[in-house]
Image 1 (cartoon, rainbow over the protein chains, first blue to last red):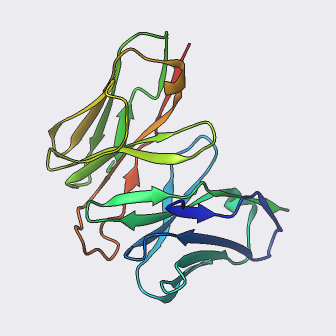
Image 2: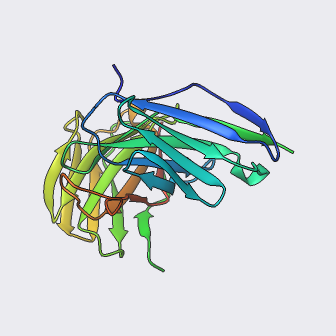
Image 3: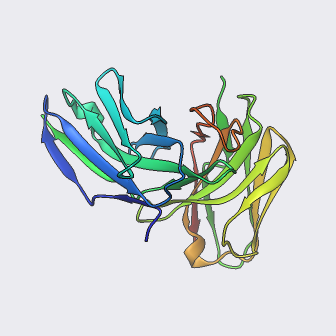
Amino acid sequence: QKEVEQNSGPLSVPEGAIASLNCTYSDRGSQSFFWYRQYSGKSPELIMFIYSNGDKEDGRFTAQLNKASQYVSLLIRDSQPSDSATYLCAVRIGGNNRLAFGKGNQVVVIP
Amino acid sequence: DTAVSQTPKYLVTQMGNDKSIKCEQNLGHDTMYWYKQDSKKFLKIMFSYNNKELIINETVPNRFSPKSPDKAHLNLHINSLELGDSAVYFCASSHFAGTSGMGQETQYFGPGTRLLVL
């Protein structure tokens, strides 16, 4: 079982629509969860982190965490062409700050 | 600028050579990491140092040897380069959160070093 799994992509969404990305993880003891965005040829940059069950909103982004079901999701509202990128889900596993990453979801926003 | 920096950005070399990549951060973090991102874009941890002490050492060939002279620097030396070592290597840094953590352990990535072994 993979530590972090993301649905295979790419996900195409029209401009202005909502993009929904899901991620599941295997370690029930995980406490911190991160979403990174990576543009082609660039390094991952943090969008959001979440550590409590429920929703966390930051601008057009909403992260949702459900520890009982071991999934974390990211919603991108009012998608813009600049949101076209690969989104990486990361889960902190263990006590050494180790992050396990999913394979990423490529999002393509169509103008 | 406050950031994580890496040198070089690009590295093209022949099989069998030895090469080094350097990383520096001025974010005041105490933990640094090396990641490898392969052609399929999968990002995988290789090593981590906390206050110059190795705390994560994943299953990596012993041709790869990290070294942290101080909290702000982490270098990666690769001996006898192989074709399969071609990838993008990212350095990252963070605060160390131990078993707790409410986001302060967020990792910040450098721009990456694109290594091509011919």
